[in-house]
Image 1: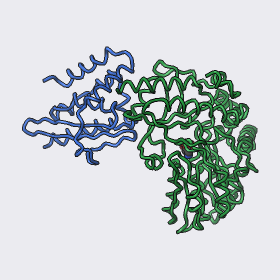
Image 2: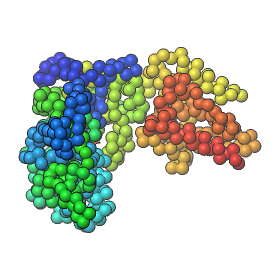
Image 3: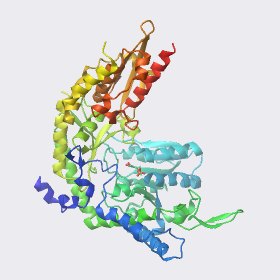
Image 4: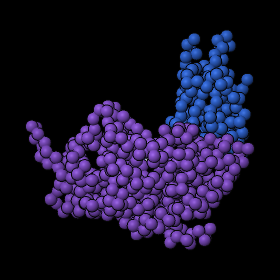
Amino acid sequence: MSAICSQSAIDAKALRADFPILASQVYGKPLVYFDNAATTQKPKVVIEAISRAYETCNANVHRGVHYLSQQATQAHEEAREVVRDFIHAASSDEIIFTRGTTESINLVAFSFGEAFCQAGDEILISGMEHHSNIVPWQMLCERKGLTLRVIPFDENGNLLLDEYAALLGSKVKLVALTQVSNVLGTINPVAEMIRMAHAQQIPVLVDGAQAAAHISVDVQALDADFYAFSAHKLYGPTGLGVLYGKRALLEAMPPYQGGGEMIDQVHYSHTTYNVLPYKFEAGTPDFIGTTAFTTALRYVQNIGMDKIARYEDELLQYATEKMQAIEGLRIIGTSAHKSAVVSFVIDGIHPYDLGLLLDKLGIAIRTGHHCAQPLLESMGYEVCARASFAFYNTTDEIDALVAALLRIQKMFK
Amino acid sequence: METINQIQDEIIDEFSVLDDWMDKYQLLIDMGNDLPALDEAFKKPQYLIEGCQSRVWVVADYDKASNIVTFRAESDTVIVKGLVFLLLKVLSGRTPDEILNADLYFIDEIGLKEHLSPTRSNGLFSMVKQILDYARVFKTM
Ligand SMILES: Cc1ncc(COP(=O)(O)O)c(C=O)c1O
């Protein structure tokens, strides 16, 4: 075990001290937090950044001539620059702040749909999408008479690229694809899939909700047309998300919501819209959140995304090996390219019961359909359990999970 | 026959000797395994209470002559079955009035109240509501 830890340059045990919540006890047991795919815990610096922002620079942005408003605006716009740098976008005008991945995707489904889609067109998604990357497209399809098509995947959880190529027909207006599956953990070959789509002049939206915190993202290297992710899954505050979009596409799309901030001139006879990125940011933005997100991004960049990815992969390999050895346990999602997510079922134990009993042992995992009902259904499951890891998790914690699973198994014998 | 509260007190006694959560749940699992299976014929949408994580089926029979309501129920999870077992032990075989006037304090006392909260997506909260609805209807028959 210590051999495993020493391979990567991450000292998880030391980093844990940065996360106050990780020292908690639940039901008298030390908390083991394995629900990182749902949301990550926050380092103290991020929690403090939120208080500090309220204490030192709380004033509405982009509108005041006064000192505080200037300070707040500066911090907010600096966050945009930090996000740009984090995902390697060309310009911070292409970084739109939203409420989360879900809102980012809804924005594109609406505004791209208005600008570019007509009855008879198609939207192509993969068979392993989160409901957030299914339902907005279904709504677009209903609104404008489009058809939703789905790229199938094999039993290991790898998308079938031949089928994908065949689906990339002339009617397809957009491909919307998750970079990392929140259930299977599969890291999809998005760069290659974007190349294939671009060969047919089809733009691609990448759902980066499960990727951005775990692998380094370069939207220009991927050549993604849109990239969506959430701050709360990236050690940042809740209620904040990002939509990256290529300038030319964003320019051609109408606004999503109307209100303050997104306008240039408002008259009863006509209104003109603000420039990018403000055109897509109606209303007061979460400037406290963006400011704290700066701290979160700097925190992980300081550790290093590549180191994080390597360490989490070690955790994944360790967990996979230990969990596979449990009789009657089946791992759902066995791609060779996986992020640190282990979904599983155990014969004879309902995932709900499993989650409940693990909770009483201090271990937090997710159970249910994980907002991916079509995915689980297609694999013959209704619900499953999922353990998902972050860099502050340790092999000791995985040992605790395995011991707990064995103990619970005995209770059902 | 014992009153609803006598049965509740017995359940409380049975659980109160167990300090550890896992022992309480072991007892619940054993009870869940003792719950008689519901005939497949009743596993239909009209008897189903869909939770987002688990499901419960409830069938109610009313014997007008004796004024007694009998419930049969099952779930797809063993722990929920254990809780169903307890609820039926307390509420099945009673008159509509007894059911409607019952104060279900045992759940709270044995530390399992969280399972009956509306935010728990296991169907139990709706099951209790459904049982009360049945009793209300039978009372007017
Ligand atoms: C792959 C994926 N897409 C989208 C989302 C939605 O993210 P949010 O709820 O932060 O908008 C999630 C969250 O679980 C996800 O895992």
